[in-house]
Image (cartoon, rainbow, N blue to C red; front, side):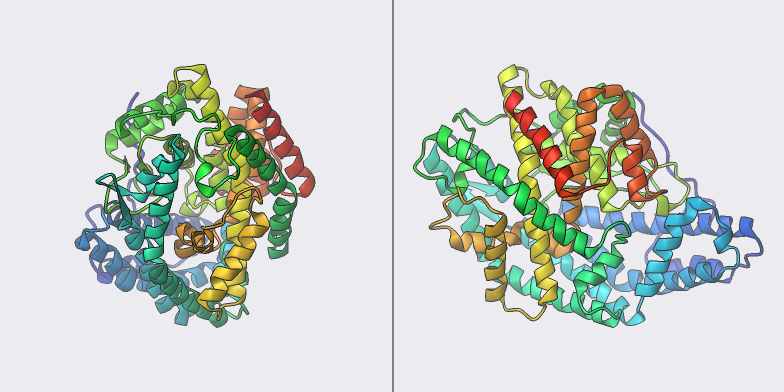
Length: 569
């Protein structure tokens, strides 16, 4: 294997540019603003130079975000991020709007060929949504959204004398001793409750500002504003609502069936929320790896078996130090793959502690990374800045197709089957959870003046609609009513969530094709990812050999396929 060196060679921006103040950037924006465009060739050069500038700026912000998440206790790293958000980003937003208007008004803009359809329609959206009075609010929001990670990163419990992050503590929810699971479950959730007031206050602040942004932009609510801001050209708000209802109707009964089977196998009188992660036959938890290095190397091996270049992508990230996988105190929660548009090498951040969920997360974020590498040669940043429905298709598909080679982590057939069964049950159970979170967000922003008590009551109501009646929540209703607080997206990336359900359907369809013809499915997967966002979402799904479809008929068809695969295990 060899390190992939694909960093963009700067043509417009000086190679030694260090971004400390807005004044470091102002000349480049002024150049683009004042440059004369006399023909289509001039316009294409202008677009290329603007894309180079955007790539540098996005990577600068990315590194500040990544570093502050890797160590939330380092005040200097936090200050670096906040300074960019408060002092540089607002000026970028204002000047970017000037450049957007220049592009829209350019007499040669409409002469650009069909490759620029995505650029044209997103530009139209940006111009329609832009309000100068919102620039300062966006800056405040970006800063406040980071508070969630800082609060969550400080959450630990002490169990048997050892201080554990909540992520690491969840390993005990797989313990075969029910008393251990119950004790740790209570410790985790009581610790969450300690910060429930702080998180409620934070969300209330965010809702107030987000609502103001939508009103300023001429919308009656933030939900409808975000539907447009997220460039959801291919489906409507009402399609999303129908999708939520269809999941409740078709998928929730399957979850109930799974839970009834679990209750019967465990032979308990009732199924408690701390009984959902233990092995159904009360076998010891799977331990697929010991260290982050082992997780990395085994991921490289699995990806290489799918396609040698996929393995080389992760190898490159390893060699360049673009992986931070270990869980530790002071590190922000969650996991992400962050594309870096100038380096053309993404960064993966996770909190691995050695369990199966960490394998699934690495396959997921690795799928995003493969996507970043495959789309790196597209000439404009707009083509590489992916919509969630496409980005999550890549990652969720990788979770499923990589299972073919999970024997790299599990050297006996029984453990491999257990791992696959857990993954497939998760594929089904994620759909109602996504619908719950999404429906809750609809309510939050259609009722922005609600109280905290109303908020928790509505969450509980929606949770019960999509949740399993088999689970006995008596004694734990107070945990349930606050359980929305563990969902990072509600705080940091509002309304970016229903895409997981849309993409999960697509991923199942890709996996079904893979089961029928590996080489054909992998080729289609690769060709779709290479497109980035240079064509519409339905076209990308078609290239992947699947439908962009979340109808009731299609959901039932795909769920039946997954259930059949579960029965085989």
